[in-house]
Length: 190
Image 1 (cartoon, rainbow, N blue to C red):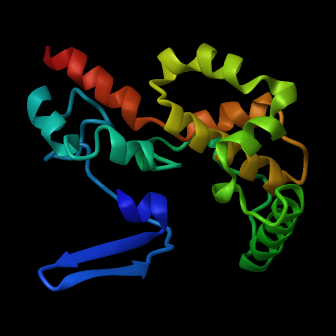
Image 2: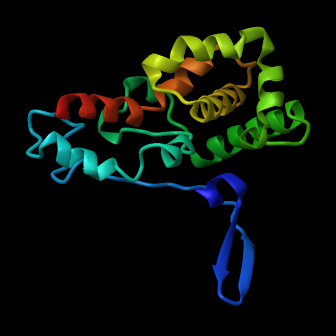
């Protein structure tokens, strides 16, 4: 977890400690269960619910809280489809513009670098604590995962070139599915 949060890694050996920079983007993939069918169609899954839970036992909790976007590639909504496909050059331009917008608004910081206090100040008109209370239970949110959702919502708004609104927060929440699926599995296994 340390490299994800602190952007550095410390290696401790008998002769001392070394700290290295570790600013990176983590991309990870995992099957939901051994047979791979659990999230596609639970009726096709040949695994017992307890077996499927063991697949994710190392992701549950603090590590999963640090993952900002989770996608179920078997269930991408049509809303991710656009009528006009983007070229690489078009995407590069939109991302460049979004980064510039973010840096200007955030006093030289990208969205993933915004401290919680600044994040809440920027979202004051949306009352982020009230939104957290509204979504925390149904979305299985911790405060850390909520802060990640808000940062993702800013990125979505920046990509669109508009000020953030509640619809961007809803979209960011849609990019989180594992905690809800794991809770469902735990309920089935019980």
